[in-house]
Image 1: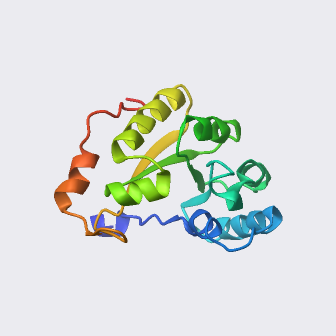
Image 2: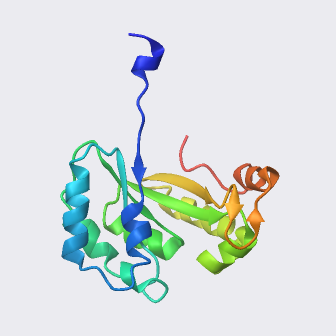
Length: 175
């Protein structure tokens, strides 16, 4: 077997979290759970099931705890959730998630619109979340959105994206 044949592609599906948060009407918890359970059978390596954001900020994801507690976990599938702050991290850890996803934008305007804070404030939140979750076994992954373009600002210079990725202010969660 060649080296190319040994490589595996992993697909990280975010449609549930990203899609449900913008639906005009609340999607019933039972329907979310059914969809996650069906997706779990498709061979996806990772499913971003929900987000532990404030229900005031995103009412459509107010059932994050119920969703995570009701899904039928399939061995080999990683169930990840978006976590914007320490309070969301605490809620996620209580639900025994496999992974938390931290997200910020490469552009200040998108980060302010999406997370209601500057990029620098997002990095400070990352550090607090990593510190809080560091004693758990949960994997922490970080995502940088609008890395190539912003719906508000247009083109995002590569140097802007790289500068956020190379920030030394985020401690490692484990060795």
